[in-house]
Image 1: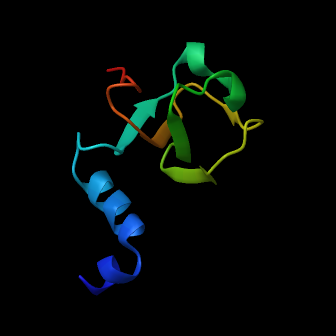
Image 2 (image 1 turned 120 degrees about the horizontal axis):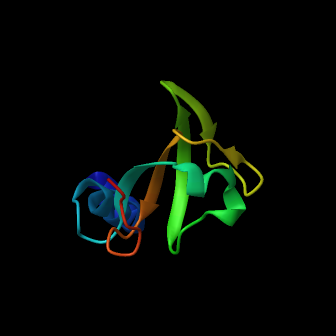
Length: 88
């Protein structure tokens, strides 16, 4: 409650991340063969990639466009779930 008075925008974003479908969502998706390669070639509309896992290892935080994705990498991104489709 006190944090909301000091940084209300921060709190609003955190609340949206915690409540699925309310605005911003945390989305996890696997890189397939068609998404492999330099990240700048495979960003999706309105998606901000915040982490890349290869196996169980967190190998990149907020990767830049030159980061090379490999099939099987797991991406964690912030986006709007209706815009960033999750492939199953």
